[in-house]
Image (cartoon, rainbow, N blue to C red; front, side):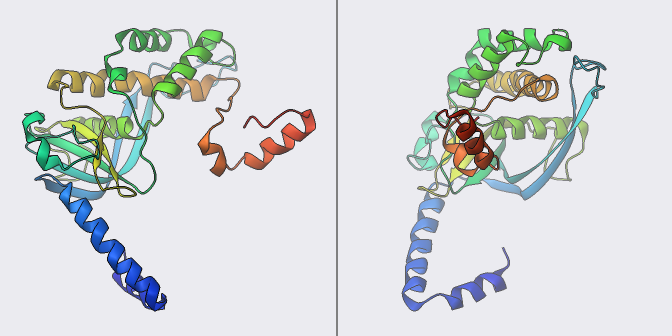
Length: 281
């Protein structure tokens, strides 16, 4: 953030607003720092790129479109930390320093994303649901000509279940992206050491107490984490890519996100024409 711009904006505030900002900033910064464990910051605003192999083959949809065998992935993570003790039990509720007894014992990279809104909640049970993950892999291996969720009830059901269990793909995507960039050597020097794997990711709750809401809990072993990152998350991403590229329809899922959807007004028009209650579709 440009300090001159911030200073200029601050000077334009009324005196009472300046006092409130000063007090709020002190309180929030103190709360945020209290939640920070011992860490080494490797990078901030770190841009990562990698290539992702997908089993989609040329002509893998009913229209015969040609899809690439590999996809170029890119993303910018807010912060990369190297930690000798990765704590995930706090869930934003208490200081990470208070959880050292339950810490994940191996050093590794932690990916952090700052959130001023409400962080998504992904139940850890998802990564241990072998039945669901096997269904995803089985679906990915099918002939893409029957893979659109608009053309197949099984795909629609599977997509809905994934959407319910995985409200955000952001942190899983970042973990996979980092791991691929580390393996392929596409990350900036010093940000993706081949000797140190990514072991967790967290949303930093800046809109709340500054705590870290981790994707994996402390009781996940190193093997479970790596299986999730290198096996389960790639399967989920491939399913979503296949669905985006082959689905004949894109059904809406009404929710809080409808409030900032760019198609909201169109939905309202369609609802009036059909004289049906608003559905977000």
